[in-house]
Image 1 (cartoon, rainbow, N blue to C red):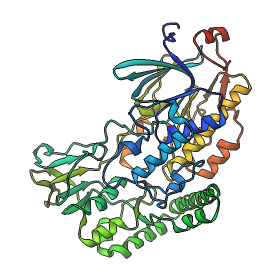
Image 2 (image 1 turned 135 degrees about the vertical axis):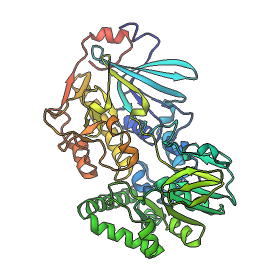
Image 3 (image 1 turned 90 degrees about the vertical axis):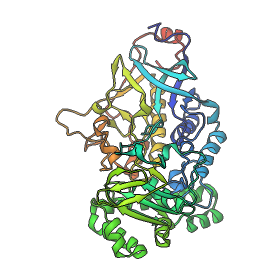
Image 4 (image 1 turned 45 degrees about the vertical axis):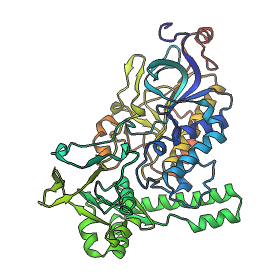
Length: 504
């Protein structure tokens, strides 16, 4: 035990992995609700912001409105509801400074491994900092590292890619000074990144083609919410923000339920809106997906920018599969060849759980594919661990805020009753395991076997319902018969000898 929990370890009550949107929010909630607790945020990169610091491709923006993607406690005050990446980065950094979260962040600390010791009721976290190993201990571990690999995106192997004489770029690693003015660009993909890139690059490129294997549902919304801006000028800032957030969230949830319950009607409505923009031929050929609405995430088109680029002739869509790259572009299965100077592989993310950190519980490796989620916030059989994972059918931060609040509730409850550890029990025998996310998107399907499972019964069900989650995470009893609480097996003096504070 002494070898594992050495005197060289730094101890904190809570250790947070990641200083992006979720990690900064978690720090604020801890400061508000658990002010006596010590915490540290270990960030792999050298800056605050996560996604909004990593991605630098042209036009980078949110695909959710900032009244719901923003924090509940900090009003979004800029005019645009669909905000660009630099504005969101500024907002997250302002929040970190305003609430003192920035003072708790350790940059360039890549967490590799975390081991739970039930006897000590303690996590030991191993990180690397500039080539040196660092060790921390914590009573609680919270992952705010998101769900994808920051080091590399998903890049399928394209036959003949080495023959292409132009430039191949993945949006996750966008070159700082890539000159595409007057160039022919092919963007491979039809997801949110591609739909953002195409109209943005079309402003300067000779022409941009979005090459898709199959269509995606798209919906256009105004980038500026005039009513929300009027409310902000008329009412106190926080009240106006709360009201706008409530309206936006309610509309998101209502639209999702209608789409799932009446898919054909929703499909006709969505396709009809695009038909009004581009005409029936384009819609039938390039904008009619094979699946129902919200079986994958919808792509947001602010102010019709994608459709306007197509109508202007600066951009076009091709629906086909790739046979191979050539020296001058891409040869398609149809025999057509797309000429290109630059090919952008907007082929998606490489998913991973908890930032790729390997977890151990009493020496046994946690295999995420073999555990269930509990309230969307914890994993069965993994003590004192919270995983912040947002909604797939609404703004990420709505759920992230709730999970951070819930973690604070659990920690305060354990303090009140002098408890040291909490572990969600798995569901009983015979319960059908369901995929972690009910989406047909390729980036989830590729790693479905590696992701935790859910069931059709609470609390092991991911509701994808903000209203349900508010009731479950803010107002339901903490001790619900599923959470198993306990104390440390060693004495208080033994824990204190290792620098461990507060809990039993």
